[in-house]
Image (cartoon, rainbow, N blue to C red; front, side, top):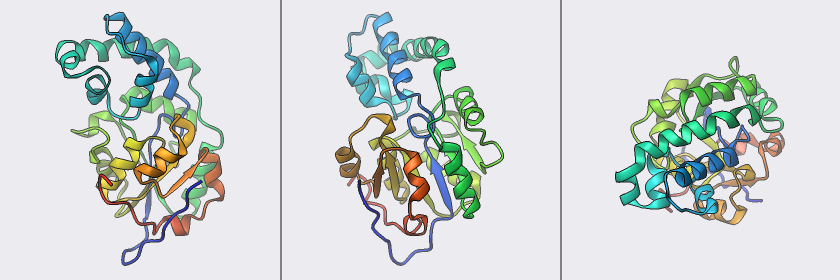
Length: 235
């Protein structure tokens, strides 16, 4: 488990920005299966472990990252459409992660603004809000339609922070792409392992704190995390 380094010379964060898939909602592996089936259905042979390693970046980047620019040019749009079709029947299996709702309640009670900064589709994010019973707790919800560039670019985080009316954020995510996007925003990132990434690689990406799941953050020192210093962009 990592620890947070206290920053100096800036005001505390007033907003917590949450990734959704793999962070608050247990859907990472469902997305990996859906993408793998999409690739296979269109004759692109990629192992599922490589697909999993790309979950967390936007779908606009995933195809080229996993299968190369040539596949993106030829089949990118068709693969994204196939992924949506393959994911649809899996949606009934999605559940919120343990104590995610309780963490949102705790942070709201401590005076933080809360926003979902998801690179997911709007209907997927809407489902997540329902699973989390979080509509009354959130100051903003953003999706892939709200940013030009997906993670690891910081666009969706900046949009979510502005929509929530905040000035400075702490990010909670589950992948190195979340950590990288947060660093480019100038925000520290807390990483949870529920997306399937290792503690060492999340720490190596620059996460200020790594925990097993959001349930562990019920006991975190949020006053210290609110002044944690982010790593340099692309550290």
